[in-house]
Image (tube, rainbow, N blue to C red; front, side, top):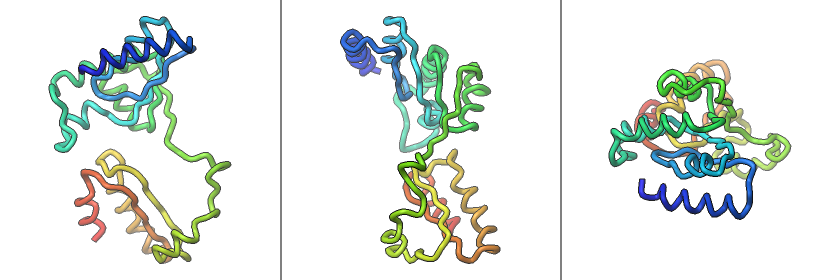
Length: 188
């Protein structure tokens, strides 16, 4: 909350110096600096939203917020004042619309992904495949923080069915997080 003053001042300094056409911010709990600067400067705020932050930070033990009762009103205010919101998934957009009450028309689903022109499938994976003993396997993977809404538990469940029909399939999960122990137990 205290950083909002510093963040706002830094953004306004950058706005005066660079005269941007818009401000692009990655949403985080209580972070009003960008929205306030955009309003003050009269330019649009484009907001990247990667998770239901108020919800996750109020329910996940290791991420607990101070003043959790403020998180949801702050989130609603920040998201409502953004001119465009980029959500990383359709379920996240649904949460923003149905739970928080954000206008669906200003939300664009822009999934996380890789540029196939830069990250070409089939190039350069031999060393890693050899290291993990999966050189001749079809690899299905997940890379990220192991949180409930990422659905890695569903991936594990689905993969069990895949293995019955494709014995060369291999599931590779890279990451850690609050669901790590649960997923290890499920995988075992």
